[in-house]
Length: 440
Image (cartoon, rainbow, N blue to C red; front, top):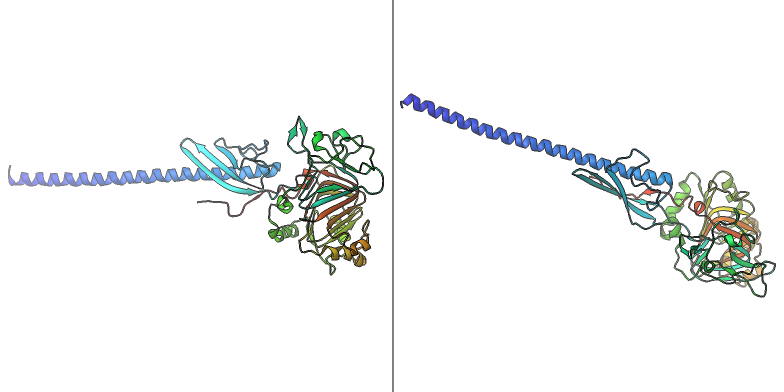
């Protein structure tokens, strides 16, 4: 082989090697390109899955809000039926138990190899009162009381374990003057004798959960089932504020602000030196007449007359949420109340001075003292009472009072009925919990 042939072979070999190296680099580059394309595709698919899962959360939230239900309700589809259904979506929740103030919604997207979960917490506020009257204090009943209870979801022998009163202390009946004096838990079996604000109840309580308390020396016409039974639950640990609003009492200012800023809310102020809101009854009447239904009163309040409507309505359209915060409450012949009444009084409140001021500031309060006596107040006879309910009243909704070691006094022809639709009108409001959204 001559010199020129050797040179040509060398050139060809070098060229071939360079081409091979170039090809290898090219293949590596294409492989990296394909990898980048595939990675981008996967990221797009993952992002689409995330968006779909986010949409599932929003959809589930809308369904729960529109139907006004909790995730545990059988009416919850868990499949995003209220908007555009996506077969690859499933909506789960935690905890699995009913009537919780907070749940975690979990939207799960699954299609072929792609799976993605997104979760966020939702708040319902409180769960409301569990009985016609719920209090952390004690209860003293007098007169003719016909309580329509909460039938509850529990049964015994196919009949309801009804619940009329839940108390932190004791519940007692004290017979006064007059006829037909007793406390009676009302259901379908006693409808001939007694009904509720909206008529006779349709449910039947088990006899062990239907009280009929009276003085044997002053027997009423209806004496069936004499005694205090399981519908009255005593000596319980009760936090009514948290049950209703889903917050501790230390956060009361937040709830007050909710009232103030709500389109149907109002905060009533302006007190005497010993804490009675001046003309509280008239202020509430005017607020109700102008469409206010969430009414927060700062201090003691006395009310009378048909200030909250002229009848008990069949629906919750006009239901109220009335809060008496850190004060005494005197109800003297308010014929009709639809909704929820809540009262809180602090342990440091001077109860004797408060009741005395009901008499001393009568011209500013403008509500009769009813069955209360100034001489009894002066000698401390009302020192344990924080709520006084007197005369004929029909209440359709519920009553909640936070007053540990104090007593609620109910005297007169009182017919309160448990109605969760009305008590829950403004507390079963669904909201996202701030800070619970974890995006990427």
